[in-house]
Image (tube, rainbow, N blue to C red; front, side, top):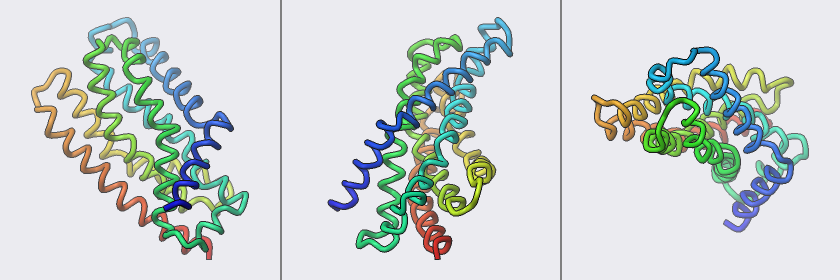
Length: 222
């Protein structure tokens, strides 16, 4: 557990020191949200209706920007070989890395969502509901991305393949995240139904993503 905690703290410090994930993700998130009103036009009612979908899509695209760093740097400096041969289970090691990645890249998107919702004619209550769904759903995006990162870590220009692999797998999370957000805003579907499914998808993604990524790393690094 000490080694896993050290790995988690190391990844958090590296992400903050390098200045990568969180800042770039939030900046991209801001760009997507601010460009949408120019593309759609000055129809505030329309912006309010599709605002949750825009926020979710922006968060999804922003999360893809930093997924290639999830394991690539460990491959470059040899840390990945130490993880494979270390005493700690590889599944727990990749889970600790994914948690650190979400904390430094996914959580800032959740925090920024209520403020960016104002650009889309969403009040603070509606933006808060969207942020709640992002809080429940963005870990699933990270752990799904963990599978793609493990599959592409040994490939040259694997970042392009990573986006192709991850995008289709995130569709269910996107569907139920937007459905839960719309249910909180306008109904008629109860908020609890899609939100519960979204939470279940996140829990499934954490388990499946951790074991699938560990298996892919073991076979890919042989």
